[in-house]
Length: 226
Image (cartoon, rainbow, N blue to C red):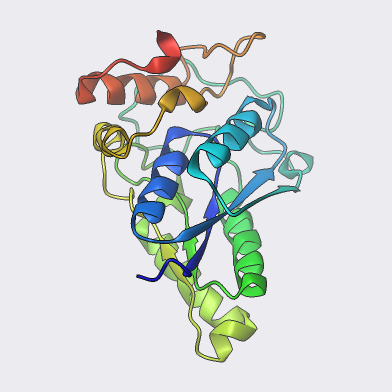
């Protein structure tokens, strides 16, 4: 693959998006990072996205604000309580689901990709470790690719966009192991849904617990806790 091939990567500052971007970079893509302020209650993940963007050496890093908190419906964008210490094996959609978030984010990435002349989007969705989110499933990604082919000038002219989801069938431990192979510093990332005032992870939300389980299964320490 030529080094000139551009890809727009959705970069949240979490370990999944960091790893997905690094995999794309390893595959030869030049990365254009997009981070969205979607109304999340804390800004630690935005700061983390800036850190990992610098670590990845992205060509450009755009930050956009689309406040989904205005429409509500999620504990991540409103004052609804973040669930703590719940079973990670539940298959119900949790209150931390943000209505239409990945559709909005991918649509923004699609628009920028069309302007850049890029045909590739990268998103760090994962269907195995957290299948409660409907917009993290392979069927959804395939549907978005069909939408992109119909809804854009590039698609109509035959330049179909591909949505790359390198992590979609990996466990959190597999993601972490791959990132370590790629030399990633996960101390740059942020995962917690409800961090303490000084930014330390709460250790009890779904995201913290999935992260902890992943590092434990990978057999390596989490640099955020050391």
